[in-house]
Length: 193
Image (cartoon, rainbow, N blue to C red; front, side, top):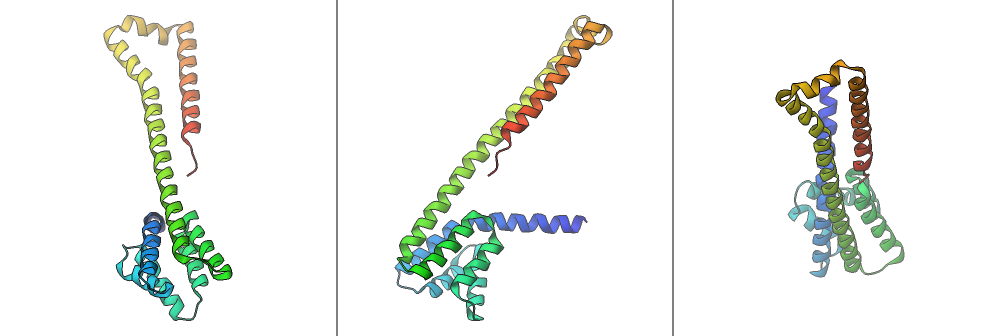
């Protein structure tokens, strides 16, 4: 059980790393094409000079093409292995290019720009989500800390909260509002990326 979970964790981490490197790999493809290489040679270039793990995925494209697959099919397999919308964008761009024709360099530059812009926006969203979580933790912990300090400094004020009926009602209301606030903060910071 733990072994399967660990394997899945490592696969997701490798997938995220490959997704984050996809923009740089597409930039390498565009630069190799500018240098006069064919698309197949540009894929070889990325496989040899790109960072791991994305270079391994491009080496797999090279291997698939050598085994007889078309470049469109090989990029479709890349999209399935890497996952994410960035890889799907690259896959569809290559498929449309092979069907309709066009400028490879401009296409890869556009995909590179889209991938980098998407990663930049995702980074901002993660930052805002992290700030929201930190605010939620502070908002939840502050009343508890205040209650602990008040019970140490002025126990005569805090004792009625736990010994009288109005105190129980006030304390119950405070706990209910804390739980409602926690649920609300959780709902606010859950942003699909």
